[in-house]
Length: 297
View 1 (cartoon, rainbow, N blue to C red):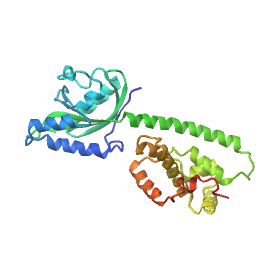
View 2 (cartoon, rainbow, N blue to C red):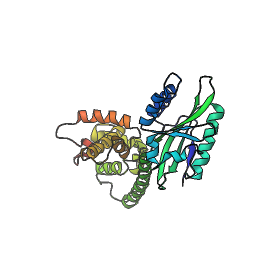
View 3 (spheres, rainbow, N blue to C red):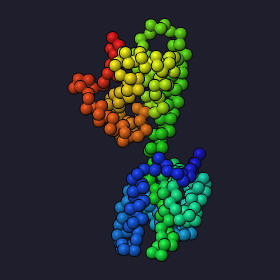
View 4 (cartoon, rainbow, N blue to C red):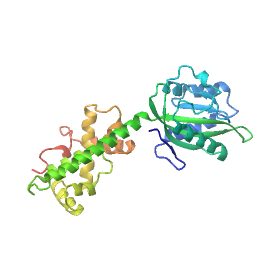
């Protein structure tokens, strides 16, 4: 199902880079710059840039957008209504609504939406709709700046699927082991639960305590006694240790993918923690204390 979401308020998925590009493009499209300069900027931009007239007919699309949509000849779409007819109806309805809103309010409007290319492949885009004024402060055209996020969306869906699978596995684990002897190795259970739920960014001390059938305070006391660190720090160290293993063996193509795989939503924050972690790793201890087999020996 194709979905379109209005995002009037700040959308955390709209990157700072897009905000900066939007402002920069607006500053460039001023009378003091030549058409050659403007065209050069639009042609070289690594994002999909569209220029529409006030009837929402396409006047220009940058090469990045043409390539993403697998369009052989963009000229046949010029002076034709946007959004394109081959887009899903949900996208067309949402984009048309937001284009009208941008013109009516003379304000930037954002949306996240899925479309299809000419080969019927689903693509996801974060779009910023910008009313462009002339020297008389009158809107003369509409600029739509879109950044493709298909890979990110696919990764989110895969992580969600994996998280649900892991949750089901964790529940089954609880059922199968609920009647086991209390002499079962405490640290082995802790590490198993953390590793099983590592990709879930919502997994924390409270969830760990619930999986272990004990109160948060009891978990804190026992884990601190065994490891010398708090439960929260222990979980974080295990996440970073696993990330170190992923990076060592090139499991993921990007640092952001590795961050999400071990439960960090913000790659920048993960990068900072990971740098601190690697700086503290001993030469012969590449997987840190959280991955050792003899923690509670």
